[in-house]
Image 1 (spheres, helix red, strand yellow):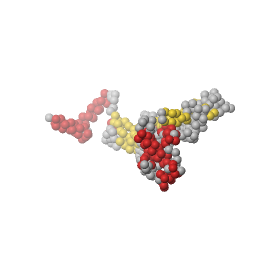
Image 2: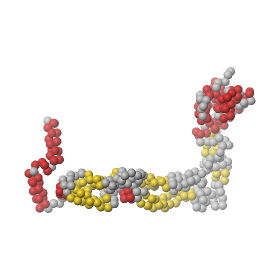
Image 3: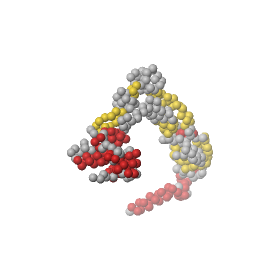
Image 4: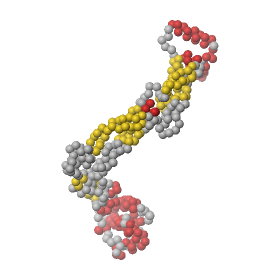
Length: 378
């Protein structure tokens, strides 16, 4: 009986990369393996066929020959690939094909490295608004895992060193049989390091790292805002077995300010003024982060009026134009009046009433809207 094309057997194209060939074989092997289909002759034949195709198409030389000459170039009787399914170790195939899923390397493969990068750390830094806007340099103290000074991070007692793990022979992994699978798993004895410490360092207990409080100087660029992060490379936890240190990320938080509120590159503040100043106008001194400036209040200013002081806001840390300071006017009602002041205000109210609605345009329009509303309800 003529053999089927190997590409058709696995259901892949002739230009399929090796990864796609393995993926296709995984699917067919799981479906047709004899352990899953006992006494099923057809499934066994399908599995043999898929295994034979896999062995050829994942071998660069055999695949090249097969592409040129077809089955004749790799047929066992022609001195080609030789051997059939009967000589195939399914465990060896699965340790290769499924290794990328279970994290294992094939037998005889390269041992895993025992060096690991240290963890990144996060530090929340509270700033005053002035520090965030103008910039500053601040010292912080951070608890970190640093390399042990006694053993230089090896974890072994002075004068000794780690030895090869007897269970995995330094590979960092062991082979475990699970049914018809043969899988690679991290060695439980050395935890993948490939080495064990027989005589641990008394200072770090064999961990190679100890906790310390590190003092660092952090330069805060002007214009940072809540949520911004400053990265200090290599200032995180020390690496394991000579691995590089992680990074420290300083997370910016800004305390609430008693006068200003920030929105992006603009600052906002509320300016209370007396109703006399609002009516007659005048000059006021208002604060900015760079000092005091004069703000001219025109006569007849209403509460809620916004005045913009250009260039008195924030220079964004990522560049761009300087923001503005926006001052919102709050007209204050006088309190704790004397009898004389109350009389003056009553006389003032009488004089306003004699002038009609021209002195309170908003009040007049509001009452008119209320009257119209109730008229519509009738």
